[in-house]
Length: 291
Image 1 (cartoon, one colour):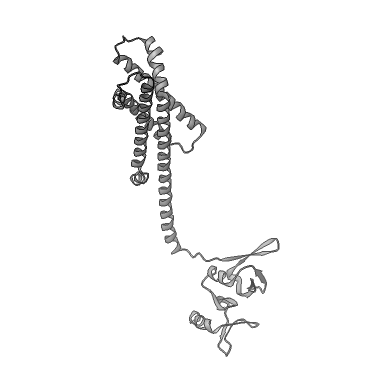
Image 2 (spheres, helix red, strand yellow; image 1 turned 90 degrees about the vertical axis):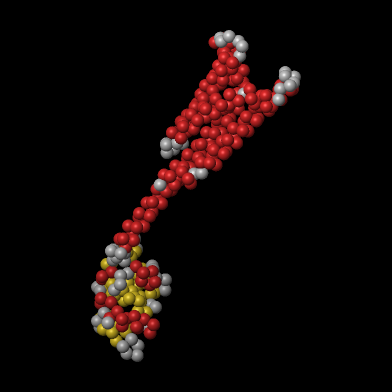
């Protein structure tokens, strides 16, 4: 499952964006230096390529520290929430990497120069120079990479959660299909509101149900009648197989049937004083049930 998730997050796109940021940063800084050199006539013969070559090693160092940043961001994204502490963690990490990066570049530049190595010279000349020259572009570059990586790894975590939920859904659906074949999900009681109270009536006590405008009347075997806000169609779907729709205005509990009268107007007899008419369209269904 994890391999599938990593493909979904499209790491190639994130790498392309980071690479473009790197190219833009290098081009911008080199062009900026070339402008000042030409503007103040410091070295008229210097070209863009000369500057790019001279500072190539400094960008290699910046890239090496970027790999450390990638590991730090990936490790941090194991947390579930993004808090102010997380933001401060990223800020201090970036500034710390920039400082170490600039210190490394200043040290290498002094070692490459003809000057003899001196801590004082390093701290008073080389380090301040690279701090002012490199800090803005290096910091912006690291912040851009951090945001991209943060979004990338957040998306990865989200995809993992989505995949997990999808697996849970499949498992639950499979369990439901197994249970539904064994369990009857038809209701065994009707919950009827009477004033501020609720009356629970077992379906086994219901003789028949008749439609009454936007309500239904529930007739029970103790001769009580309860009015319920519902339709025959919705009740027909909920009630068990012993309840049969015999007319557009009535559902009958076939367990209480005493007699089927097949006169010119067919009826189901529940007791001596209760006869429920059967519509012509439902007569065949009633006969099949009783056969």
